[in-house]
Amino acid sequence: MLNIRSTELTEINLPLVHFFETSFGRTYERRVILVRVEDTDGAEGWGEITCGETPGYSDEWTDSAWATAEQILSPMVAGKEFESAADVWDAMKWARGHRMAKAGIETACWDLEAKKLGVPLWRHLGGVNQTIECGVSIGIQDSVEQLLEKIRVELEAGYKRIKIKISPSWDYDVIKTVRAEFGDILLMGDANSAYTLADIDLLKSLDEFNLMMLEQPLPYDDIIDHAKLQAQINTPICLDEPIKSPEDARKAIELKSGKIINLKNGRVGGHTQSKMVEQICRKAGMPVWCGGMLESGIGRAHNIAISTLAGYTMPGDVSASKRYWHEDIIEPAVEVSANGTITAPEAPGIGFDVRRNQVEKISKRRVLVT
Ligand code: OSB
Ligand code: MG
Image 1 (cartoon, protein in one colour):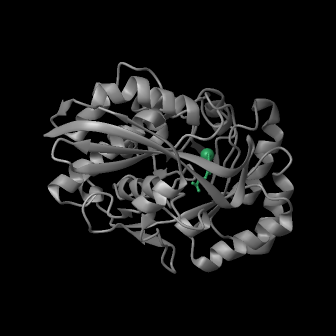
Image 2 (image 1 turned 90 degrees about the horizontal axis):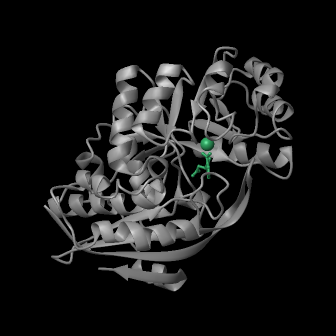
């Protein structure tokens, strides 16, 4: 039984160690919304709202998520009683969309519940693989030399798979150079919706590079043209942006819109929804892997936990804190082993301590909803 007394939102600003550029823009500093839920016994759980600073990746962004979490979603959870964290999603279902805002609250409730039970969150979620495989996502750089250097560093650190962001001005030639330099590493590209079917010749030409997959080449809300594209290229398509629910996953499988799903906790609305997508995909033989949204340690810890489920069979975009932050807000920071793995912690809940003093230091605003 969960008796939620309050939800508390805190916005913190975290400068990235290195800018992150995708086909929709460049980010230097994250505005992260942390969610702290407290129950009537005074126990707490932490979550993170993973949306970007602009509506460039999805329609949610910091200020829209803040308003929605404060005014609409928190009142649906604060002061309410739940059989279990798995029921929190349903309490917010009336509100359409806003899945990242919902996920921040929902995942905080899962952390709280696992802590109260004294079990690690990954086990509480039904995880089976305590050690997960890690890849990295490398943004568009100012030069190809800079990209090659970054890839070299990550391969030396042990990461299992390299994802590079691509766009119409950073695609064929760049991938060709990377292949020539690093041979048959596990390599993939993520276009973040930078192409349309009119670019079919270019997209077909990428087949020669034997990419592990091509992530989200076509528009952010499309699963129909992706099916047409998949029928014409050999590279497996991985869907990211358009899969916002278990129903979306089912439809994409039926339509053959792609062969893999990048499953982001925030995008689908939290752990309960991720578990449903994972189950649908596992039954259909569709691999999933855990994507990232440049999370702080709290979102990262939740990503580690959910990645331990059986259906997450490919290396995810879950990597070490130090790739993003000079100083993370959790203790210890997330570290990756020399062979590119993370082992989910045994401590209850997310298994990392939140550095409250550090959060205070970099906090920009706070609101408590009771
Ligand atoms: O498309 O997967 C994406 C980051 C922000 C928005 C969208 C995406 C990404 C990443 C980075 O690829 C993943 C990470 O390292 O957190
Ligand atoms: Mg993506």
